Amino acid sequence: MPEYSELVVAGRRYLVLEVSVKPKKVRSRGREYLQHYINLPKKIAGKLYELAGEDMSVELPVVMLVAPAEWYHGILWEEMPERAWKTIPARVRRELESLGLGRNPRKQVLIAADEEEIRKLGLDPTKPITLRDIERKIREQAKKTTPIPAITT
Image 1 (cartoon, rainbow, N blue to C red):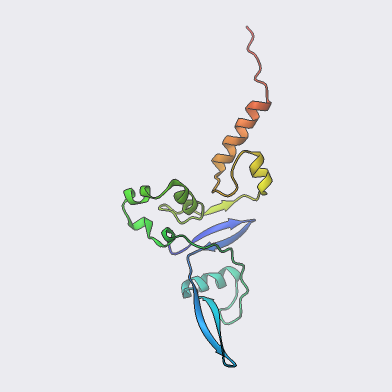
Image 2 (cartoon, rainbow, N blue to C red; image 1 turned 90 degrees about the vertical axis):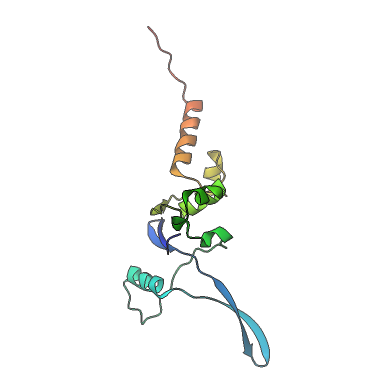
């Protein structure tokens, strides 16, 4: 998996990377609390400041799209043989590829659609969907609703 990939969502560039949420016990007024931290690698922080056009000495608000990573997200697939990549389930490969984290990472562009629109096409919005999937479903629906003209000789 590359160090990070880039994803375009609603016209804005996002960095996709794996980070860890780390618990830390903190004492305050004789009580113990659990706080959680996310540390960004310096290179990634620098890239965020570069995207924002800001100096690294200022506080930078960021937007995060987060989800728990399954065990396979931390594996360096591009360094493993092709047979290893093929051993993971197709659902997992599609997810990694849609995030730009597959064996051959490419910048992805997400298309905005609400869940109901996706369901109306006959697709499952809880699974990765490609442009090819959408095109195939639209063509299928067009064939059902558009009568094919008869050929006359």
